[in-house]
Length: 438
Ligand code: MG
Image: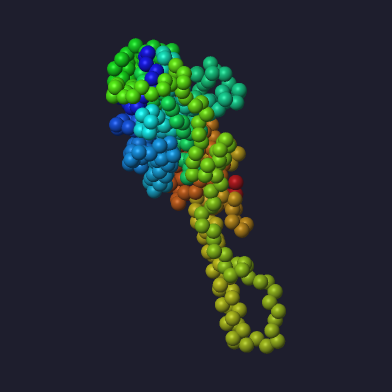
């Protein structure tokens, strides 16, 4: 690793490995390796959801990020991937609640023979720079525990064994709006980039990772060794590793100025971009409008109580009043069907319940509880909580049931909550209870 000349940088060699691990039944991690785009996605969501989300994210990223794009284009490709996953989860009840992490690196050819890399990231997969024998984490985890460390509530040692370390606070496929962290990197020849899912870093410490990256020259072999080590340390999750060797495959290029430091320079502060860029602010849950607004009947739907009695009631007046009453009744009925026609998954205290109606109610029709799931906020992934607080609209009870059960099984699968009871809500098909007020 002696060369620190800034070069026409390219990924000279890439190696990747993935493994289901020793505990999970299915590998929900996905890898992308092309000649200039590299990514790791770690899907989440019960049943097939996690696999689908990770695969869609990676496929959309590849097709959306074309040509000679840079940081902005990579972030845009993330947003496209977010919408693709979200769209799919909305159109297929069995996939409701799925999501995925995504961490990607793209090579951007530079003008002055100093190519750069751009990195974009959402979730708790990670990107590291290995330079001069030192491993430094570029990405910050979007996880509950990492946020608690950043706010000083936990120290890193407490975080590493924390039971909630798998709870992701930002993921693709959860909301229309997505905040994507991104960086421009200017590493030096000989540096390595490591992308990995949390299944590696929860089992293998940084020192061990650094010693493998420092001693195993072939990136494919290094990736394989890291996966093997994670399995040997427990393999409690899917494990995915991508190792990129950076360098100059054109050694007689002009000797450009040397890199400013002996290490690859990394700007530690990510650029935050998204659909609605809000620099330096945390994502605030978006309040979703509760569907299309009901078309209230012509100025108020309720019939006027006092109609001054006309002096003589003619047949025409009777007809007119009847027509007026009909329009008013139609308006009331339309609002009633709007107000009572849907279902949403929300909270009653810390209990997760399925409501009939609209979040917040409509013109005096309050939502009523259609079914109680028996689950509490502690039994679903953290990333779902803000949606549940607002109420997540579902077309019918079966979709609501699928959504809740996907969330519960996801939380149980990552060990963040106890497995759902085999005789509970999720073991049965959805039933309709007579609604009563919460
Ligand atoms: Mg994982």
